[in-house]
Length: 316
Image 1 (cartoon, rainbow, N blue to C red):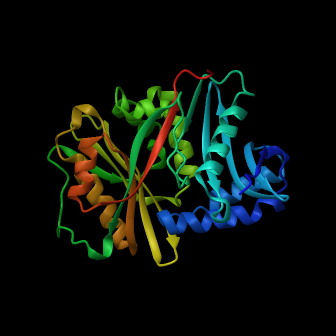
Image 2: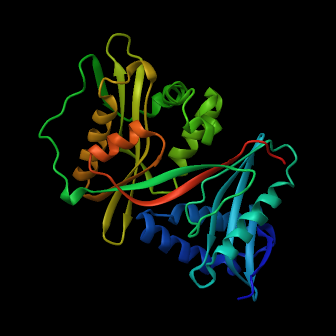
Image 3: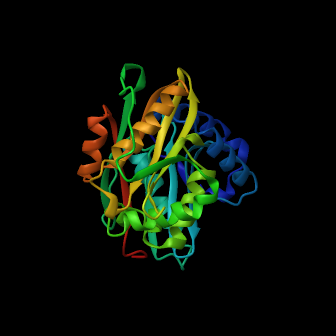
């Protein structure tokens, strides 16, 4: 099969990509039980104004694959890459990713490139990229039994999500991921200001449903009131019901080994059940063994594997 032609996404009209976005939304529901509708709507708006960087694979005037990326300060992030069912092949996906990496070169201030392309069907690698294995985990809440009662570990207090504490949560993210492997994958964990942007984007533009304040919880130390742990969640509808997604679980180093991670997860999962969610999902870096063991002990099972990529010496 002849490969489609890569063209700049800014040159594509909305009617050329409409069918592709509809199909991708369906695949997100099928593969991850995630609602991609809001993100697809934003992509449509930016494509319509020819203001979204990326690449489209075009065949006979129709987009059969696309990617998009954003550039913030000195970092570029490839946010999505998808090839439709009829044209999906290792060669088409490699062409899409290679063309996207080359397209980022138009931005000379970019000094780092990151991507976690969840919609690739085939194994991908790049000779200049560090590859981090990640797992997509799922818990069938219909088959899960929870303790009748669970309390916060002694000395700690739990509360629901509070918008007024958003800045403190951003600082908690920074403290929790300092020196952590995931800070190698996402450099927004490395500085307080970047952690603030990351948190804001995660809450306001989630790719896996709408942010759920009712299933998000914060834990503070009773002695000084300092925030030491958080679980942030989204919820969305899918064909069979509702699904809850744990977007973020973090506990600062000084409060670890007190059982706060398990406690926060139980709080979120119980709320998912209360809200009639049938499944809970999350992603975890495979080498993060402590977190992986926690999720497995709660009943999560691996549904698929994906990878995150970092080009640390960009541009090469």
